[in-house]
Length: 151
Image (tube, rainbow, N blue to C red):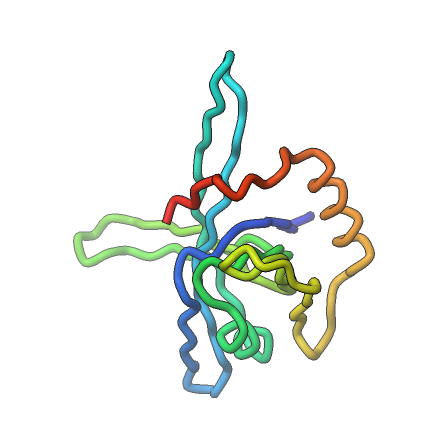
């Protein structure tokens, strides 16, 4: 079975780092992905918010290097948490577990060299990721500095 996510979005808040009792770093943050589309003569936009979690050295690097507004490419997998609340109801939450993150743009729309953050114990197929990113960029409308970020 395949469980792979590739997402480009902007951080909605600064990453928060915590440590498990074992000493493993865990960083959590949110990203927003905006879909722009034309409906008749008008342009519409819808925003989708995703929770991201990273572990280990990747988590420490992300907490140190990222902040609200950074645009990133996240490569990871989906993970579902299930629990029963105090009210007796069952709850569920789906998150993206980051395996590699690439910085595309800093918050003030300053172009930067693409910088990749990958865990030290391995990596991902960067060539494939770069090719997918190029394909996505070719399909997307050009970025307009007047575009608003919904946060």
